[in-house]
Image 1 (cartoon, rainbow, N blue to C red):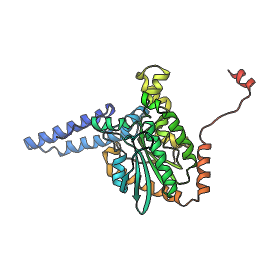
Image 2 (cartoon, rainbow, N blue to C red):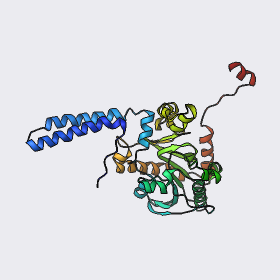
Image 3 (cartoon, rainbow, N blue to C red):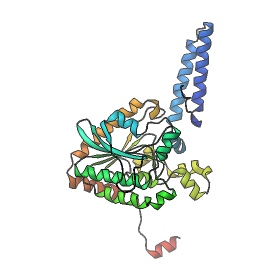
Image 4 (cartoon, rainbow, N blue to C red):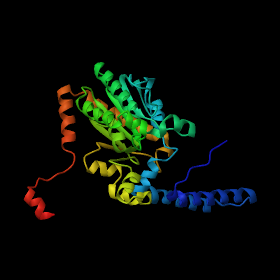
Length: 330
């Protein structure tokens, strides 16, 4: 049975136009009317509406698009872009986290190590993947595989797509913050190329735990933020009702990441999002990986590590003030 199309609130004008088009075509066929001119006019209006909607998205609408249930997930891209993916399991300490997967594969003639956060589509799969929110053992598994990649001179490619790391009692008991912090430290010194792609959500330390990379690529309708909008709203306004306001304040969006020097490339998506044309989205990601991975593989280890250090050293802005100046300006 075919599943009904999932429509976001801001996409409803498009749905209404498509319904009018279907009704017009059905009426024309039933009564043998020539409705070609009317059909052409509505089709033009549909294309115009698409451009109006998707080229002027608000930060909150971008977040909704990044969370679209039909959006391709990591395994969708891995299956289309890489060859002979062999998943590796377990952190050798506690267990195997299905929200964060990893393994070896071939990218063309180049062997690589893939680390990816994976969500689920149906209820059963979402429970298995913990809605894409990794536990500490997921980050420890990722680090184990990255260290294996370093040992065998394999570049690491990370697919980032999580709202946040899981913050439940068990996760805290097993020290999720320590696991993420250790990944940040170890990735900064890893002697192999690191390439990251944000393909949906990049929320909080949950995303950062596998995102200390040499090159960070962001899909056009993905986002990367210190905190998800709902979490920000809960802290500042004590209500999730202000999530849209929080999204605006956080300046969520791929272009903003480029302006701030955090992302290295915005990867184009088809009009309306990656789920509208998965083949096109896949092709754009493949080309971006090929370009940046080729450039990173050409660097010697010392240059690679120095460039990585400088990349993160230059992020952000700060000013220095004396105590007296701070008091005077308070």
